[in-house]
Figure 1 (cartoon, protein in one colour):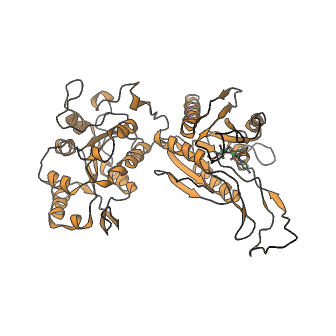
Figure 2 (cartoon, protein in one colour):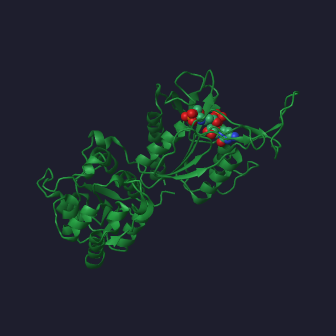
Figure 3 (tube, protein in one colour):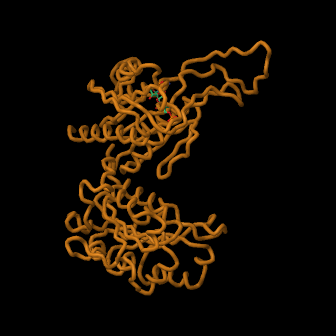
Length: 448
Ligand code: PMT
């Protein structure tokens, strides 16, 4: 399922100018990476005041070029190398000031200088206040870029603006900008496939380079939060999962370059940006959503959701009245979703007989095991759910399990190895899990 992205092998030069929307460039960069692109970031000086170059360097794994007078360590002129190598230059967000400078060829910043020096297609996503965008000066500059320079303008959208007004000026949906870049490149050959002809990467060992990109081009599905099993229209059986653990996994996978799909039940933490999100309530809905993902394919599933094992047999359509005698509920077992996915992925039918596997090559499957007092029972879940890894946590331990920013986990692998980790922030736990997933995927590809 490691299908190449639509920009695999391409170099995208992402120019960021000083708009409040500059923060969205972080997600735009991630979307380009998820499409398999190599990205180099160019910033105007004012853009560096809105978003830290270090963040963009870490995510692109290249030094950010923010100074038109800067030379590369080997003496080459950075923006000329980028202009010669880029398959597309994307300027987003583009401010009114930048549109004016570009329309008149005033190359005082590295973004404008690169556009002047390149023969690659240029895609521009303006973002500014509505009145500024409507001004005849801005419109004239946009017209010059579009009609005289042949640049593709991804028109801004209508919506709430930073000024508090509502109007046309909000940066276009990031997916539209990515699609415009892909369209602009079309079937042109890759301009400079040799890395030596491209802007340099961060040296290994550089702090910012530590963010791995081992999941670029992979589709990772993550479940998070709890499920809510209705008793009546008002009440449900739920659990204490906040979604924090699963969302940490999603964010880490996204930052390592994966295309991520989050399937989330009840959650009380903020949902992440830069990924597809499917909201569900019940275990049955979560199963349906996962089977849909299985049909369309993924490279790894990390099942951190706390799925209710039982649900009321016959939820009431109307609110149940309070009765002095109390209430007895009949519960029936929910499907074991992960066990079913494990069975289908390994090509085993409901009756245990072999059937064609749902996906080839098999995705990496990771389950969690919520235990109390001891994690000895977790190892059995490796076999019953037919997964590659089980992440066991003792949810009764302080600082571990539900609703805490930290977790202590032991990663059990199907090959019998165990990795007992200390208490760590959930994001760090997520990175350790993804280290294992990334290595398993690389091993899988090597043995094909
Ligand atoms: O969300 P947080 O507040 O950060 O809390 C994190 C967490 C404690 C929820 C998380 O670390 C965790 O342990 N998640 C798994 C909870 C759980 O359901 O464990 P389990 O041992 O009951 O299930 C084993 C595995 O089977 C899990 O991957 C579970 O998602 C899956 N399962 C369980 C039941 C079921 N009917 N179908 C399933 O697929």
